[in-house]
Amino acid sequence: MKKRYIEWSILFAMTVMLLCGCSLEHDYSEQGIFFDTLVSINIYGTKDKTVMEDCLILCEEYEQKFSRTIDTSEISKLNSAKGQWVELSEDTVGLIEEAIEYSEMTEGAFDITVAPLTELWHVNDNEGMIPSKEEIEKAKSHINYKLIEIDGNKVRLKDKEAQIDLGGIAKGYIADKLKALMMERGVKSAMINLGGNIAVIGTKKDGNNWNVGIQKPFADRNEVIGSVSVQDKTIVSSGIYERYFEYKGEIYHHILDPYTGYPTDSDLGAVTIIGESSAIADALSTSCILLGSEKGMELIESIPEVEAVFITRDEKIIKSSGTGFQKISSNTDTNVQ
Image 1 (cartoon, one colour):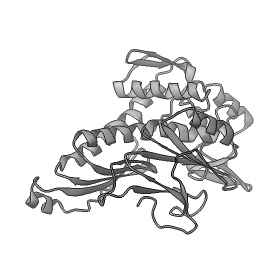
Image 2 (tube, helix red, strand yellow):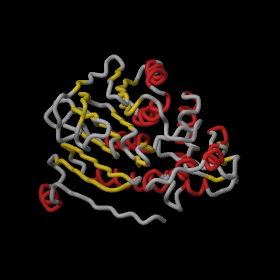
Image 3 (cartoon, helix red, strand yellow):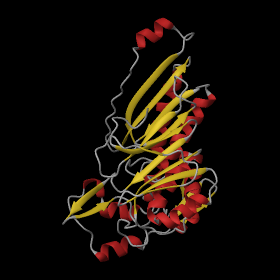
Image 4 (tube, helix red, strand yellow):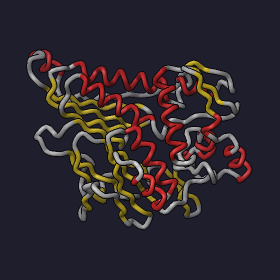
């Protein structure tokens, strides 16, 4: 299993909570590393001090199911099964089925069998090694979501060399599950941040809407280009600035096109999706970058429950109606206020 280091940050002393008992409402905040990203959960004004613990347990459970880099995960077992049937949990099968729906919706632009290309490019730690055309063509030959066969709770990949990567949808799915858990436990105000995949419950503690900043591509991490004001929504952003390396003056980013085998060269640099479902927003944010501004906005307008803000590579802003997006002329020090 891949070794993982987790560091928790507790903002309110446990001794104080124990002295106060469960009759008073408290705020709870935790951070940790899951899914190779920083996860931050903030819950406000709740009497249930176990809800945060249960959220963290849920994160652990989902990581053990969905991670491609943990050898004992369900997805790793499926990827190493060489075409054999593998029995998976209801969660994992359900997420794969949902991902296939988005693959069909985007005509394959979104494809969870993109893992052979992900491994080939290894953008996260690439210092300038560009795969050969032959290597890219070989990886592409194993990418096709139609290779996934499902029979009840059993799944197999009909191509022995095919592999699944749920990175484009898993965080959204998990954010939805965390939000549902909190609401079932009576939480009225909370913010979940899974590496920039944000879901909020209700309003802020003071009753005002959440103001979520949208990152300015290739700028400093806390420099935003604008913000949206929301409550009970999810906001998911994807961009070519998130993970990339440079080689001979060219930028090679992590959003790989299943059709070309290379990082997408569409006109979009970043996409933010606002909606009810974080899983849908997660899949759409990546899909729209792959599709480009014209086809991407056509897709957004065909889905009533979502809104979008596109930022082109030359920083032109394109937005769907009703987003409430406000451009910011000056810098800010935070992404969520």
